[in-house]
Image (tube, rainbow, N blue to C red; front, top):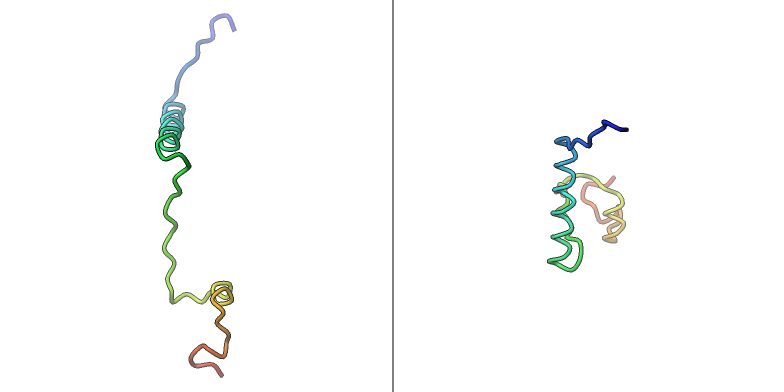
Length: 64
């Protein structure tokens, strides 16, 4: 360890800047700011979402 030098790599630099930016964002808003979620198509069949909305299979069109 006599001749070892600390080197800052590009990954370390990017990580430090992201962390600093995140801390500034929290300080300015008083809380963490959430990111936007990915848009999900309404046409996709999703049983959990239907249950949450209170829609039964009898309410859906074209049920056999």
